[in-house]
Length: 168
Ligand SMILES: [Zn+2]
Image (cartoon, rainbow, N blue to C red; front, side, top):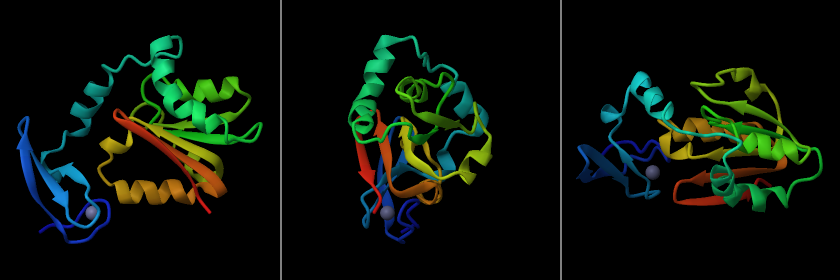
């Protein structure tokens, strides 16, 4: 048994091997993740992200992001202040919210690494196709929660689904 990278319980155990990677499963929170020792190093990681063709002028990419943008934008007050965490090589979701009159900071460890954005308090935080890449999800989510105003929204989307929640 190993410590889970999300809930930190000592209930993660071998789950399966696929595409050359060993996966662990946490019996407490159900997270399934690649064994930490088999992760890509930062250089390999960035060269994969460099291949992402994210472009604010790409309608197909906008449609993909609208799965999170549309439901979340209906909940926001005019001129809200947001953060897009993991904005990638071609920030687009932030542009979509700014077209609506909101102000949005961006953060990305490779493409927009200014960590002073975490000194602010936000009405909403979005993170798309990012949560599944986090090496320390517990630490990163604790950081995001700490940057949300009371009543603020956290919107998360991965390749396979989206969810948005409000903090009390
Ligand atoms: Zn867990």
